[in-house]
Image (cartoon, rainbow, N blue to C red):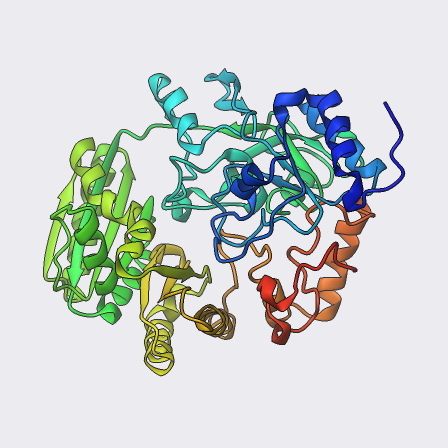
Length: 490
């Protein structure tokens, strides 16, 4: 291979040729108009065009691409389907974007040991589709499961409706083949749930591409339960629905999923999806999914209905057949998309609070909405306190994005104050990095950086993510605030 003296802007044609030698010409994207496709992830308000995009198909090709970046000091970012909502796959200036979208093979299905091995570009929902014929399914199910990829789920430690009972992505990853920032290939974990030694698999899941790229992922699959029932209850107040959530969980019932939507969200999904299931005049609805043995589900359905009525539910409906269950869930799964019907743009956050704090925090969010003048729709995983407030605004109006960023920041501070977290499943990325000091001390953050730096000593893997750079929120995270002038200094 020819030599390359530097990675300055004048060298990108030669850099592209170097990648073409490794991956083939059709796996390197360099035309300006094509690069625009990759300038943002699901957090579309923040944009930065990468210098180059490469699309490997194998572990070995990923390793060679990373080695080239390491050799010539090129910052690189891993990207899957681009559905992330925290700017985790947002490019930095003069970077290489390593896109795993063509790594879409399900490599092995092992029903006897309840596991599958997939490449990172495999779509979340494909895993369940692949194993459903054998009577199995894959539990983590983000709302974007029909388009988000397993590699991105691993990077962000994604959750979903069923994480209340079955846990988030990290609880379903047995082992990983990963390419580290120097281009070396390493095996983490294995084919059994518990491995001796340090939990490096747990370290990698949720590391947001800052310590490497997962290229093969061994997942745990679960046996499809004997019975499933979805209960829908509507309430005249969010506080009443929140009290029902508390009482259901304190009763010892562990639903497979428990979701809440407020009136603004209810009407948005009915306008767009028209399920006909959600009463438009309800202040809140609660969706409770129960699964297990048939007799267990029947008893828990009775108890959940009783608890909801005790807390003032007006109407309670339920469904056990797959078609009607899907109809009840349809609106919740489409809630984020439906928000686009209410406003030209929305800014979504992802904070976590203790279930016992639901009513109080939701009241404070409503008060914040009134003070700021921005409507806030609430749709969230009520069972585990994972809030997803959507702040509605118009990006075409000068200054509104910056204002709703501040509103989002205040919501995150509320979550921490209530004993919660600034992220439940979307990750920190570029969007929430400046709020990390709200949760962690300087010593905490420094310790995390030591771990990152041990595996990513040059800082080339997804620079500028997770940790505050600069350290204060006052300088913001938006590119207009020059958060991405180049490779950040640590």
